[in-house]
Length: 212
Image (cartoon, rainbow, N blue to C red):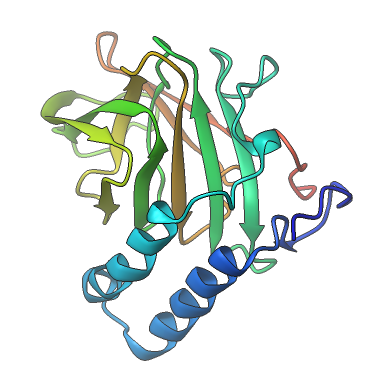
């Protein structure tokens, strides 16, 4: 059952359906049992794949663009589950046709997959040492087209800086399982051409972040 009556400061299952509960329970179990991030993410692949393959669990309210988005470009970022400790979240990201996210990082391990539509994912390698928090030298390290049911892993620093562009006729909807409260943590936007970095919070379209 989906509960759309949550207050802005709620945590836990914002969309409470069996498909999400199964994934979160498996993530918690593997987080207790496997300390190595790479091994844990690999072990999570079957459960995450099942969520992407299941139909009908994502409400329409969390699969539409958002003109007021903190990401810009009509991009909607909808929290589906949030751990109050800030150690785990699940959210949908809706990118309108032809739109792109900023180049950004995540600062957490996790899994990202496309539920509807298709995205072009462009990943960057950082070439500088990161000592200057306002500057970064980036180089494209890879591109891939990710379609419905496809997914990839995040294991910072490898692959953590990227942007996605919707290449399907309609909006793309991707599902993100990450080991932080991604919409609320302070992370970074990059301008590869200018070599600049800006701290930002992308925020969620459906719930507010806790006060600082």
